Length: 301
Image (cartoon, rainbow, N blue to C red; front, top):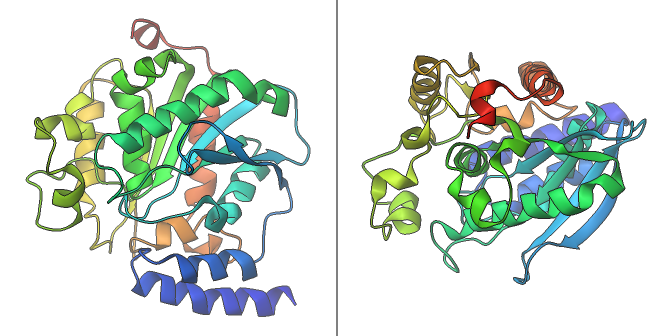
Protein backbone atom coordinates (compact mmCIF):
# COMPACT_ATOMS: atom_id res chain seq x y z
CA UNK A 1 0.00 0.00 0.00
CA UNK A 2 2.82 2.43 0.87
CA UNK A 3 4.38 1.83 -2.55
CA UNK A 4 1.08 2.61 -4.28
CA UNK A 5 0.72 5.83 -2.32
CA UNK A 6 4.29 6.78 -3.18
CA UNK A 7 3.62 6.30 -6.90
CA UNK A 8 0.41 8.33 -6.70
CA UNK A 9 2.21 11.04 -4.75
CA UNK A 10 4.85 11.06 -7.43
CA UNK A 11 2.29 11.82 -10.11
CA UNK A 12 0.99 14.75 -8.12
CA UNK A 13 4.54 15.90 -7.46
CA UNK A 14 5.13 16.06 -11.21
CA UNK A 15 2.08 18.26 -11.55
CA UNK A 16 3.33 20.35 -8.66
CA UNK A 17 6.69 20.87 -10.31
CA UNK A 18 5.02 21.90 -13.55
CA UNK A 19 3.04 24.53 -11.65
CA UNK A 20 6.10 25.92 -9.90
CA UNK A 21 4.43 25.48 -6.50
CA UNK A 22 2.02 28.27 -7.37
CA UNK A 23 -1.19 26.27 -7.05
CA UNK A 24 -2.35 24.73 -3.81
CA UNK A 25 -4.35 21.78 -5.13
CA UNK A 26 -1.54 19.47 -6.35
CA UNK A 27 0.46 20.09 -3.17
CA UNK A 28 -2.59 19.41 -1.01
CA UNK A 29 -3.12 16.10 -2.80
CA UNK A 30 0.56 15.23 -2.48
CA UNK A 31 0.43 16.01 1.24
CA UNK A 32 -2.73 13.94 1.71
CA UNK A 33 -1.65 10.89 -0.30
CA UNK A 34 2.07 10.64 0.28
CA UNK A 35 3.62 8.54 3.05
CA UNK A 36 4.51 10.40 6.24
CA UNK A 37 7.31 10.21 8.77
CA UNK A 38 6.14 8.24 11.79
CA UNK A 39 8.38 10.05 14.25
CA UNK A 40 6.39 13.28 14.29
CA UNK A 41 2.79 14.16 15.10
CA UNK A 42 0.47 17.15 15.03
CA UNK A 43 0.12 18.43 18.60
CA UNK A 44 -1.69 21.75 18.15
CA UNK A 45 -3.76 23.10 15.26
CA UNK A 46 -4.89 26.63 14.43
CA UNK A 47 -3.33 28.37 17.40
CA UNK A 48 -3.99 32.10 17.06
CA UNK A 49 -0.93 34.36 17.08
CA UNK A 50 -2.50 37.62 15.80
CA UNK A 51 -5.70 39.42 14.90
CA UNK A 52 -5.86 38.61 11.17
CA UNK A 53 -7.85 35.50 10.15
CA UNK A 54 -4.65 34.04 8.64
CA UNK A 55 -2.66 34.55 11.85
CA UNK A 56 -2.81 30.90 12.89
CA UNK A 57 -0.20 28.20 13.24
CA UNK A 58 0.17 24.46 13.70
CA UNK A 59 2.71 22.73 15.92
CA UNK A 60 4.26 19.31 15.27
CA UNK A 61 6.24 17.51 17.97
CA UNK A 62 8.52 14.48 18.02
CA UNK A 63 6.74 11.30 19.04
CA UNK A 64 9.64 10.56 21.38
CA UNK A 65 9.83 14.16 22.56
CA UNK A 66 12.39 15.28 25.08
CA UNK A 67 11.55 18.26 27.25
CA UNK A 68 12.92 21.60 26.02
CA UNK A 69 13.66 20.38 22.50
CA UNK A 70 14.96 22.84 19.89
CA UNK A 71 12.22 24.72 18.04
CA UNK A 72 12.05 25.11 14.25
CA UNK A 73 9.71 27.67 12.69
CA UNK A 74 9.11 26.75 9.04
CA UNK A 75 7.74 29.24 6.49
CA UNK A 76 6.26 27.79 3.30
CA UNK A 77 6.59 29.38 -0.13
CA UNK A 78 4.16 30.39 -2.84
CA UNK A 79 5.53 33.70 -4.19
CA UNK A 80 3.96 35.55 -1.22
CA UNK A 81 0.67 35.06 -3.10
CA UNK A 82 -0.50 31.57 -2.16
CA UNK A 83 -0.04 28.82 0.39
CA UNK A 84 -1.68 27.14 3.37
CA UNK A 85 -0.04 25.40 6.31
CA UNK A 86 -2.37 22.42 5.92
CA UNK A 87 -0.62 21.52 2.66
CA UNK A 88 2.76 21.20 4.38
CA UNK A 89 1.98 18.73 7.14
CA UNK A 90 4.44 16.30 5.55
CA UNK A 91 7.18 18.89 6.20
CA UNK A 92 6.06 19.44 9.79
CA UNK A 93 6.10 15.73 10.54
CA UNK A 94 9.46 15.23 8.82
CA UNK A 95 11.10 17.99 10.85
CA UNK A 96 9.47 16.84 14.08
CA UNK A 97 10.75 13.33 13.44
CA UNK A 98 14.25 14.86 13.38
CA UNK A 99 13.78 16.05 16.97
CA UNK A 100 12.47 19.59 16.48
CA UNK A 101 9.28 21.02 17.88
CA UNK A 102 8.13 22.41 14.55
CA UNK A 103 5.89 25.44 14.10
CA UNK A 104 4.14 26.06 10.77
CA UNK A 105 2.49 29.50 10.54
CA UNK A 106 0.18 30.91 7.92
CA UNK A 107 0.81 34.56 7.06
CA UNK A 108 -0.89 37.31 5.06
CA UNK A 109 -0.48 37.22 1.30
CA UNK A 110 -0.56 39.53 -1.71
CA UNK A 111 -2.78 41.26 -2.83
CA UNK A 112 -4.18 41.75 0.67
CA UNK A 113 -0.75 42.94 1.82
CA UNK A 114 2.65 43.81 0.41
CA UNK A 115 6.17 43.93 1.85
CA UNK A 116 6.84 43.98 4.79
CA UNK A 117 3.50 42.82 6.29
CA UNK A 118 4.30 39.11 5.93
CA UNK A 119 7.57 39.67 7.80
CA UNK A 120 5.69 41.31 10.65
CA UNK A 121 3.44 38.24 10.68
CA UNK A 122 6.47 35.95 10.85
CA UNK A 123 7.90 37.95 13.74
CA UNK A 124 4.55 37.77 15.56
CA UNK A 125 4.57 33.99 15.11
CA UNK A 126 8.05 33.83 16.65
CA UNK A 127 6.75 35.93 19.56
CA UNK A 128 3.99 33.37 20.05
CA UNK A 129 6.63 30.65 20.08
CA UNK A 130 8.62 32.46 22.74
CA UNK A 131 5.56 32.76 24.97
CA UNK A 132 3.89 29.38 24.43
CA UNK A 133 6.22 26.72 23.09
CA UNK A 134 7.51 25.50 26.46
CA UNK A 135 4.08 24.00 27.14
CA UNK A 136 4.57 21.82 24.05
CA UNK A 137 8.07 20.66 24.98
CA UNK A 138 10.09 23.27 23.09
CA UNK A 139 12.86 25.51 24.34
CA UNK A 140 12.03 29.19 23.62
CA UNK A 141 15.71 30.07 23.90
CA UNK A 142 16.71 27.71 21.07
CA UNK A 143 14.75 28.77 18.01
CA UNK A 144 15.83 28.21 14.42
CA UNK A 145 14.07 29.50 11.30
CA UNK A 146 13.70 27.74 7.96
CA UNK A 147 11.67 27.91 4.79
CA UNK A 148 11.35 27.15 1.10
CA UNK A 149 11.23 29.71 -1.73
CA UNK A 150 9.34 32.81 -0.50
CA UNK A 151 9.37 31.18 2.92
CA UNK A 152 13.15 30.95 2.78
CA UNK A 153 13.17 34.69 2.11
CA UNK A 154 10.97 35.24 5.17
CA UNK A 155 13.24 33.12 7.36
CA UNK A 156 16.38 34.86 6.10
CA UNK A 157 14.98 38.36 6.54
CA UNK A 158 13.82 37.65 10.08
CA UNK A 159 17.21 36.23 10.94
CA UNK A 160 19.33 38.90 9.24
CA UNK A 161 17.31 42.10 9.78
CA UNK A 162 16.59 42.15 13.50
CA UNK A 163 14.15 45.08 13.26
CA UNK A 164 11.15 42.82 12.68
CA UNK A 165 11.75 40.63 15.72
CA UNK A 166 12.54 43.62 17.91
CA UNK A 167 9.30 45.28 16.80
CA UNK A 168 7.47 42.13 17.95
CA UNK A 169 9.26 42.23 21.29
CA UNK A 170 11.56 39.28 20.55
CA UNK A 171 15.27 39.28 21.37
CA UNK A 172 17.05 38.40 18.09
CA UNK A 173 19.58 36.33 20.07
CA UNK A 174 16.86 33.69 20.46
CA UNK A 175 17.40 32.80 16.77
CA UNK A 176 20.31 30.38 16.76
CA UNK A 177 20.43 29.67 12.99
CA UNK A 178 18.47 29.98 9.75
CA UNK A 179 18.00 27.66 6.78
CA UNK A 180 16.75 28.41 3.30
CA UNK A 181 15.79 26.08 0.47
CA UNK A 182 15.70 27.72 -2.99
CA UNK A 183 15.27 31.19 -1.53
CA UNK A 184 15.40 34.61 -3.20
CA UNK A 185 17.92 36.72 -1.28
CA UNK A 186 19.45 39.03 -3.89
CA UNK A 187 16.97 39.85 -6.65
CA UNK A 188 17.36 43.51 -7.52
CA UNK A 189 16.43 45.09 -9.83
CA UNK A 190 12.81 44.02 -9.44
CA UNK A 191 11.33 42.40 -12.53
CA UNK A 192 7.85 43.05 -13.89
CA UNK A 193 6.22 40.07 -12.20
CA UNK A 194 5.58 39.04 -8.64
CA UNK A 195 8.62 40.80 -7.23
CA UNK A 196 7.44 44.19 -8.48
CA UNK A 197 3.89 43.56 -7.26
CA UNK A 198 4.99 42.56 -3.77
CA UNK A 199 8.04 44.80 -3.24
CA UNK A 200 7.62 47.61 -5.77
CA UNK A 201 6.09 50.09 -3.33
CA UNK A 202 8.97 49.84 -0.85
CA UNK A 203 10.73 53.24 -0.75
CA UNK A 204 14.13 51.62 -0.09
CA UNK A 205 14.50 48.68 -2.44
CA UNK A 206 17.82 47.58 -0.88
CA UNK A 207 15.98 47.13 2.43
CA UNK A 208 13.86 44.40 0.80
CA UNK A 209 16.91 42.20 0.19
CA UNK A 210 18.26 39.73 2.76
CA UNK A 211 21.79 40.13 1.40
CA UNK A 212 21.74 43.80 2.44
CA UNK A 213 21.67 42.78 6.11
CA UNK A 214 24.29 40.02 6.04
CA UNK A 215 26.91 41.00 8.60
CA UNK A 216 29.23 39.64 11.29
CA UNK A 217 26.38 39.36 13.80
CA UNK A 218 24.14 37.31 11.48
CA UNK A 219 23.12 33.82 12.63
CA UNK A 220 24.73 30.75 11.05
CA UNK A 221 23.01 29.77 7.82
CA UNK A 222 22.29 26.60 5.85
CA UNK A 223 21.58 27.64 2.25
CA UNK A 224 20.61 25.10 -0.38
CA UNK A 225 19.26 25.24 -3.91
CA UNK A 226 18.80 23.10 -6.99
CA UNK A 227 21.25 23.37 -9.86
CA UNK A 228 18.35 23.28 -12.35
CA UNK A 229 16.21 25.90 -10.60
CA UNK A 230 14.93 28.43 -13.17
CA UNK A 231 12.37 30.08 -10.86
CA UNK A 232 14.79 31.33 -8.20
CA UNK A 233 18.25 31.20 -9.74
CA UNK A 234 21.02 29.51 -7.72
CA UNK A 235 22.99 32.78 -7.70
CA UNK A 236 20.68 33.94 -4.87
CA UNK A 237 21.99 31.18 -2.62
CA UNK A 238 25.56 31.56 -3.84
CA UNK A 239 25.65 35.34 -3.37
CA UNK A 240 24.24 35.30 0.15
CA UNK A 241 26.52 32.43 1.17
CA UNK A 242 29.55 34.31 -0.16
CA UNK A 243 28.56 37.51 1.66
CA UNK A 244 28.13 35.67 4.97
CA UNK A 245 31.40 33.79 4.60
CA UNK A 246 33.17 37.08 3.90
CA UNK A 247 32.17 38.32 7.35
CA UNK A 248 33.05 34.98 8.97
CA UNK A 249 29.54 33.76 9.67
CA UNK A 250 29.28 29.94 9.59
CA UNK A 251 27.59 28.84 6.35
CA UNK A 252 26.84 25.51 4.75
CA UNK A 253 26.09 26.00 1.06
CA UNK A 254 24.65 23.20 -1.07
CA UNK A 255 23.78 23.20 -4.76
CA UNK A 256 22.08 19.88 -5.47
CA UNK A 257 22.78 18.54 -8.98
CA UNK A 258 19.76 18.11 -11.24
CA UNK A 259 17.19 19.47 -8.77
CA UNK A 260 14.70 22.18 -9.72
CA UNK A 261 12.77 24.66 -7.59
CA UNK A 262 10.14 22.22 -6.31
CA UNK A 263 12.59 19.39 -5.77
CA UNK A 264 14.31 20.94 -2.76
CA UNK A 265 10.98 20.97 -0.94
CA UNK A 266 9.90 17.55 -2.14
CA UNK A 267 13.23 16.11 -0.96
CA UNK A 268 12.00 16.65 2.61
CA UNK A 269 9.22 14.09 2.02
CA UNK A 270 9.44 10.35 2.52
CA UNK A 271 8.50 9.74 -1.12
CA UNK A 272 11.31 11.86 -2.59
CA UNK A 273 14.01 11.85 0.07
CA UNK A 274 16.34 10.03 -2.29
CA UNK A 275 16.46 13.14 -4.54
CA UNK A 276 18.93 14.88 -2.21
CA UNK A 277 20.04 14.77 1.44
CA UNK A 278 18.35 18.11 2.11
CA UNK A 279 16.50 16.94 5.23
CA UNK A 280 19.45 15.29 6.93
CA UNK A 281 21.93 18.03 6.04
CA UNK A 282 19.66 20.91 6.98
CA UNK A 283 18.55 19.44 10.29
CA UNK A 284 22.09 18.41 11.25
CA UNK A 285 23.26 21.99 10.69
CA UNK A 286 20.35 23.50 12.59
CA UNK A 287 20.68 21.01 15.42
CA UNK A 288 24.37 21.83 15.80
CA UNK A 289 23.76 25.53 16.26
CA UNK A 290 20.59 25.07 18.29
CA UNK A 291 22.60 23.03 20.79
CA UNK A 292 25.61 25.33 20.96
CA UNK A 293 25.84 28.30 23.29
CA UNK A 294 25.45 31.65 21.51
CA UNK A 295 28.71 32.98 20.11
CA UNK A 296 30.27 36.25 21.24
CA UNK A 297 29.17 37.91 17.99
CA UNK A 298 25.60 36.70 18.45
CA UNK A 299 25.56 37.99 22.00
CA UNK A 300 26.42 41.45 20.75
CA UNK A 301 23.48 41.78 18.33
